[in-house]
Length: 437
Image (cartoon, rainbow, N blue to C red; front, side):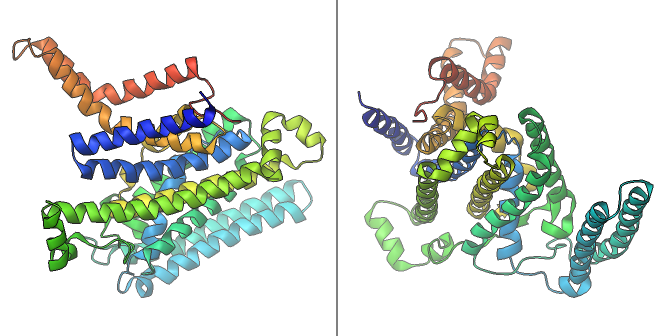
């Protein structure tokens, strides 16, 4: 069997499983799997750029996805009335003062001769800058968070179209990745993993605790949709022509409107995925892509040939993180809300890594396949496990301790299945389902 036929059959198998879900369960569930599969595929492409192209072990995927979601709030939600006059400009000034403090400390470190004078100057700049920053920042934040905290309490956004928030999410994640990369990319791979994991947790902690930014754990609801591509169910249900078309297909207006909206999202997500996949393939086949793989395989030899390894690592770290930021913005748009507590390393780091490894590290199409397959299993394994446990325990008496234990164990089928699949793939196909060429 040729490689092309095998890969086509693998994609057809995953597509068949999703279609089977539509026939056996509901088409709403099937399209939701497609939508989250498309978003997960974009995340997997971002991680594959970093790991598959350059060998960078980034375990902070969750943080960049969260920054993409934050960008949607800052770009697309309407501004909170009175927030800027109450304290918004003060917050902006405080952030500029903080940045100026860091720049001044760096300049002192570069310009002053090494010794006690340099050390004391840097300490003085940082201490004074910190107190000035807090003196401006704290009262401004308190003023913003005091504005109708039950429904607002945050500064709001720019009220721009949500489609503009998707590239903005990529830019925000790329900016954070540049700052992180300038300090962390000099570390060895295992230390880089620890550093990126810790930084991701810091990003989530900031989002949870800084209410002025995005309401913290109170969450932001009512994220606007990318109209006119994706409408609102209530508007569709009020449209006589749409209701008539739904009835002709044997669907009630509620189900039909939900399917229409989710299909609209699927179309937009597919366009973004295809564009990013094309760009990733072009990069892979370019001299730049060949250079990145050469650096991945042997950094010492690449550096001896005159390649700036650190600079190239920073480039691809920023690019991969930007793609994860775009995916995070898309996911927040799909959810219609930003929930910082929902960002967990298991879902937004570990699972994405499983997708890349199972699909095939270094192969963009493998990452896409792995994303759809793993997300399908992530959604379906628990109900299948519950059905299986009910079948196994059908002959046991009600109230049996063993029956209760087995039925309750179905909730752990997801983690068990992910670990089992990872072990099987690493044992029998260590390069993934679609290996790197």
